[in-house]
Length: 168
Image 1: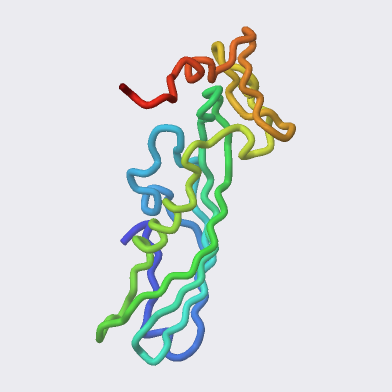
Image 2: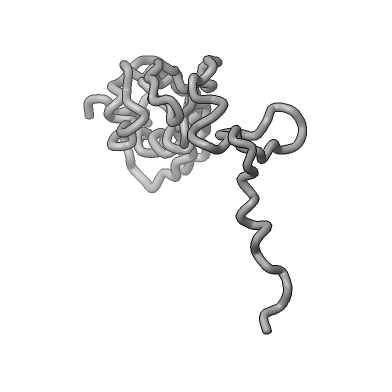
């Protein structure tokens, strides 16, 4: 059970239980910590839980997950602490003495992970923020979209050649 976050229901009764501590990131991240996201230390957690009517456990969790992240644009690595705040509901089926919240918390963490992490995540300016190859990488910061590539040719010029008249 190492690295797992569990609630002992025998101690719970009708009062609120509070858990604070740290756990190994591998227990919570599992195989999700690959590619551009890797664990950079232990996960700290604060969990408040209560049993209602002996049928449902409601746990509110605050997690801080230290990650080593690779920017999807410039490939520079940086450290980032992912904050996750969530509520987990677990239906109780009978005489359980303990409820393991690890899998439910893992799902919440996966949903909070950035899909395409970039340097801007920590407030840094990405070195490849303006231009890559012939085309502009991002929309211009001013209103509207600047579709002219640095070479003076529009990225949409190929569409101008498409005929809009019905086929004969």
